[in-house]
Image 1: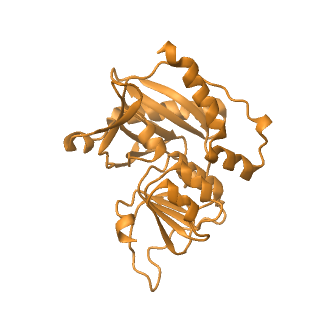
Image 2: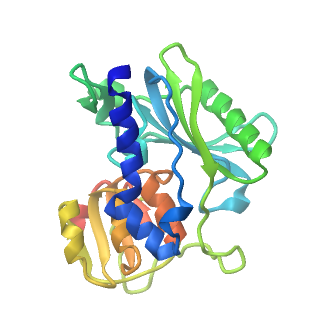
Image 3: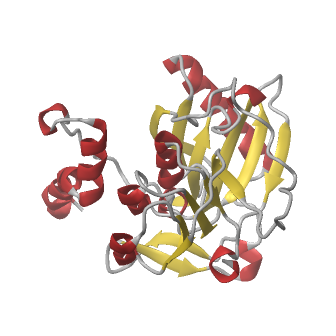
Length: 284
């Protein structure tokens, strides 16, 4: 409510000085005086579902498709990496035909709490096991994402919410970070590597090939102990992992979205990342 507006405004501004934000600026040589912060004050969307959409496939920009991730409730779970959302790939040709639909593992939904703030709420299996968007809604959202790309003249990454009346709201739209691997050097992934058996499959968040000793991340506090050149294996993807992206070989998680913040950072840093493997922390 309005009584808490000033405190919320200050909390947003303070986000400029989190360890993660300071590290990111130092890596890119961005001085503090070049980061004026704007704060948008908008009414909370009573979201039935939320997520992120990219106007091109981040790892295959030449594919002529766009990708959409979504989950029940607020979009914090998708963006932050605490849920593996539903996934759709849509062709940008003609009437936007659906290329692929993949059901996520949505065990929780992030919802506003009665006592204030937000938090995860357990979902019934029947709810979590159903797509959060209909095929018609996926196509409607695809048209919105393509319109945003045309308006800004470059690929876009859009956070969206679907309210309980069935209307979409665009929460934010920003330039899409693409994989550092150029189209000239990109090659199809090998179906197998001689002398090594396939242990896991997942969603490619950032292209590349890497190797190194496994470091299982039990919690964010363990980031201090991540060895150089290791493969970080975690239960959830998290933007906090940016603190070690300059010195790790790769990232693998049980849960996470290829359109989440960590995936975007991995592409920017050129760190190979595979998310939504379901069982990396038990297999590795």
